Image 1 (tube, helix red, strand yellow):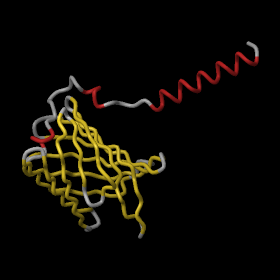
Image 2 (image 1 turned 180 degrees about the vertical axis):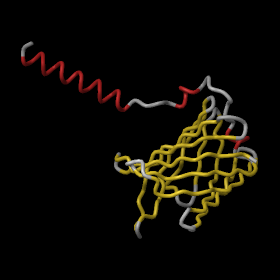
Image 3 (image 1 turned 30 degrees about the vertical axis):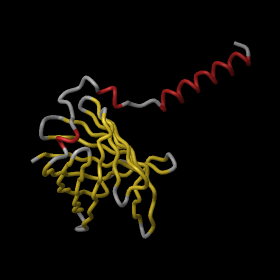
Image 4 (image 1 turned 120 degrees about the horizontal axis):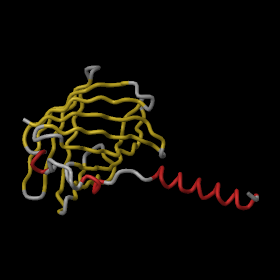
Length: 179
């Protein structure tokens, strides 16, 4: 193979690998999955979640429980979350949610930069936002790629990838229980 052809082949292969690496699941990939996650129904009333944060190496850094209550009036909802961490610290986040129709949602919270945007399809919900995260006396703006999957009428599993400047920082994993 001549040098030019080899270089062209190498560039094409590199481009294909790069594009494949960027491709990830889309919420529509779950359109046929059941049970269907109706976010407004699921996030109504009391919920409990148990979770953990793992760093990029997979080491568990923090464990926590969350008690929350969701309420809706028309297209507007509030999800009031109370976190208790394994080190005894406590935190509260209040989401103000908006049902935009066609499975799309937006949300705001005091520690969220701008607006969170999400979409449901089948048993899945994908939620993306930037979180102002306190770390060692500083505040980092961290990109959150949040996926929720309904397992049954009471259980939703959640995995959130956290990154900054495109660098993976770690993951949050939660199991939600309704009622």
